[in-house]
Length: 379
Image: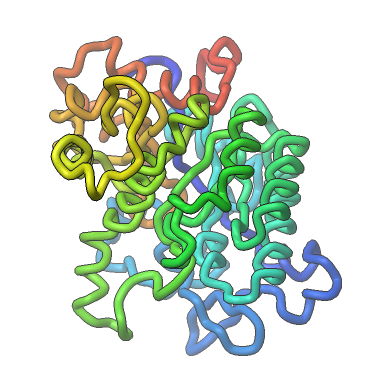
């Protein structure tokens, strides 16, 4: 492995009092909280909206030590302290051999489900303030991604601009908005322009759909497994909407990261996008300037976060080595922590050194502006 390994997709774990202590006063009584229900901690919003347990987003290492213990159930006292204490987070990075990380929320992923627009924006502002404080422990190694609510575009632009002033490294938007507000709609144009002008990449992260449940239709049904196995359906739709509507032709310097959906799904979608554009012009009604294809915009404007997709690595000539960014997913249950270097060595065996360097750190450094000269060794 190269000396500098960067995780493009790691997480913080928001402390239980974050929302009550930081949210705007008018929303304090409705702020998210962790509540113990039947012996396990649940994420609760407003009076009785239970969104999720915390076990799957707080249990790094269990897959190697005791996989039978992994479930949605969990308690805050069992969460890795590195999730909410930056000094411990940096120590955990060093233990895992990781030099820098791009940080997403844990509980916050689920708050894209909040129905009340004003409440969701207040939640996001409080989180963004806390995350900026967290990253100040070591700005060279910790790059935070702001949460952005696109229900109100002018408000979203203001929050993205504020995120830039807080030195956050990008903005996370819902992986899939309401059906009548998908990303091919012209109302988003000012937001795409603002992100491009600020030089902030945008992210579509798993578990952030604006509507519906996170997974299945009922408690503990087979549909949970089916939904998880096919979860790339929604960001693939969003990506196609962005490309087919010409967003990246109009905003050539805009970068969108599709995070925690792995890699191997991409070659088929690239092929079908290009086929549709060439052969179904009545459906691909926006026509690009010049002899370009949808896949050209993918290779220029889209990057992909992955963890352990060995098949995707084999398909890197089609996906594009410059489009692939490894991430550890610390401290979640599927994280590669604390065996990240071992797992990377296995899935990247036989890959040329220059390509390995891009996949495990170089691309992340480029997209999120890490100064690699300051990261010649782990903490």
